[in-house]
Amino acid sequence: MPKPIPTQSASAAIDARISALNDWRGATLARVRALIHQADPAIQEEWKWAKPTSPGVPVWSHNGIVCTGETYKSAVKLTFARGAALPDPAGLFNASLQGNVRRAIDIHLGDALHEAAFLALIRAAVALNLQRRSSRRPAAPAGPAL
Image (cartoon, rainbow, N blue to C red):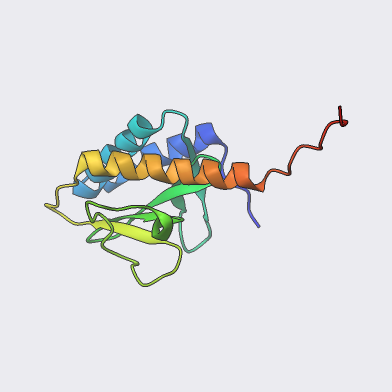
């Protein structure tokens, strides 16, 4: 299994993807990227799943994958790894709704993203990852009885 590109190179790869798109998809990807960093300044950028038939995918992680940012001809798709477990009171999720784990937001030309709700969704995804990680830690051994 190929290893992810190191963070610095991943950021450069995302920059290159945004520049190469040179249309509304690049601007949209750049905007959601900025919002993701605004929501969680500690988020890590990764570039995963590169293979001969695909250049790879931008990934934002904090103690696990928060979301990916794929671009298609007619949409920018933000897939949340554990989206089904996230509250979405604004109804941002509009794709991949049938699965038990993931949820996605498809943004099309002319769509407006509810930025406050998106920031809340990113923060909730990070909190869920942090909660999952802390619940997996083994309990500390009990000290001697007093």
